[in-house]
Image 1 (cartoon, rainbow, N blue to C red):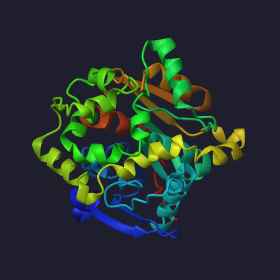
Image 2: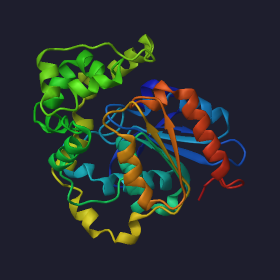
Image 3: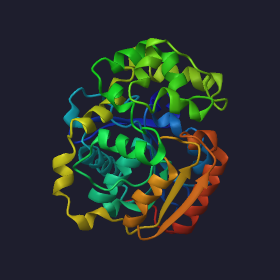
Image 4: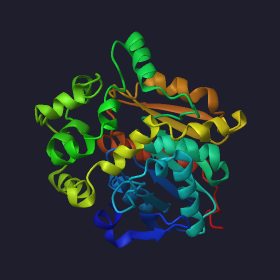
Length: 339
């Protein structure tokens, strides 16, 4: 929630389609460009709390939205609102409102899915891409979570997306919101391999909540940060319902028609791209991320970090230096990106 976590640098804008977005905005120093940071689930702009001060101090402009369904941004109940094309159009509209022509961009988790569609629908707005943990996902109208799990079982010996069925259930948001401490322990475990027991197998997530499990939380999550997180995902702020709608929309195939309509030449990225894979994330298996990204990206750099899913938090210094090195090499000096 940008307005809570970063009150002095946050704004709220109503886009032409009527959607209200809460976001962090820091102007660049000199002629450096803007960086757009896109978070995942279950999080908000607060996920980028280590990147915002680092890159603003380095002179970069910063744009960090609470994405649709999260934080201080609207949380529509209609699944059609969570089409990836529609949300990528929202990002382009936000840049239009700010009179910013082009940006560097970073995506993590679902933010990587959204960044993938920005590459497909609005490629002129991005000058370089960074995918953290989750790589580029080419358009695919035939998304089938059961087929993905079956393939993972054959190749790796376990399901990757078993939790999607629980996330898609009608009662999942209420369960996760009512059991907030369990949700924090599930999302941010001290040991990333705990996901192999509590998240990856089909049915495991529901059993985790039925037992009211509360595993230890990652050591890099401070008490003050946990307090902010609890506020962002409190029942008063909508809990987890909006974020879960990204999963429910994908399961309902709301993206299928848009992705079927995309010509194949729009699948490819022709700008500098950095993929950072995480060796301790059992869901975003590095080999899968590389295999899914490499065929579609002309100028691809790949880095690996010994980290679980939340690499920008757990390995903040390493990520910041890695991204800065990449952006310093590929930014357009003298162009702030303003229209």
